[in-house]
Amino acid sequence: MIRLSKEELMFFKREGYLVKRSVLDADLMARARDRLWEGAAPSQKRDEPDSWVGPFKEEEENEDSQNRRKGFRWNFREPGGESWMVQLLATDPNVWGMAEQFLGEGTLIKPERIRGIYCTLPYGDVPHRSTTCHVDGHPFHLGVVGYIDYVPPRGGGFTVWPKSHRRFYYDFRSQYRTEPTDQYDKDREFVNQQPYVECHGGPGDIVFWHHRIGHAAGHNHSQQIRQAVLYDFRKKDLEQTMEELPCEDMWRDWAGLRNIGDD
Figure 1: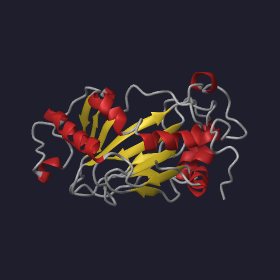
Figure 2 (figure 1 turned 90 degrees about the vertical axis):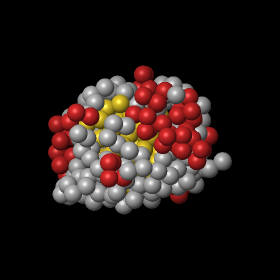
Figure 3 (figure 1 turned 90 degrees about the horizontal axis):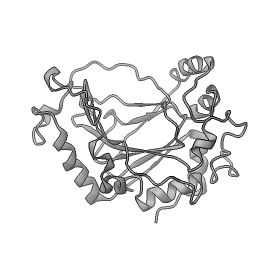
């Protein structure tokens, strides 16, 4: 069983994210890669990398939320409720155990689905452009992104602005709902001028992230499709706590981090 060290917990508390390598099950990742191609556009061929380059052709775009294809983004949510997909990420014993280290043993809601497989197509000859952050707009505590294939540098990796969770947490009128104050836009402008970290890696690598950290899907200037699975851990008391004002101690609801230093 993979366990987080005190140093890793301190790093997450300070920086707002944590990368763990080679966590996910290889057989389930292979199954997910196979499943993804069931939702591909007609012109995309698994054995023809040139056919992966975006954007999607206008006639092959799909606005169906279960298999949304538009521009360079492909969000295949359809398999997210299949039991093996939930097992791949959310209820993987190592992932679940580490999430409980953050939030408390026995406190997490058992998942019925994950978000699905989220992809970014290769950009081809699209010019490089700036990367800007956002904060997610739905109530949860701890996010996790898992890579089911290689994500090289500048390959669309999950991108975070370290320490921004400490600023953004207090820029909302409640702990978990999306009710930004006027300060949010000011802080977002500031954070976007700070260095960010693009989390690249191999199959099975995961990234844990705090629900208020500034983040983005990186731009994909590699030769392959960025393939990731995502889940949002929520505690059983979320309905009772999500509308409360931000706490003076932002770690009140994080049993594993409340009494641990961050430096």
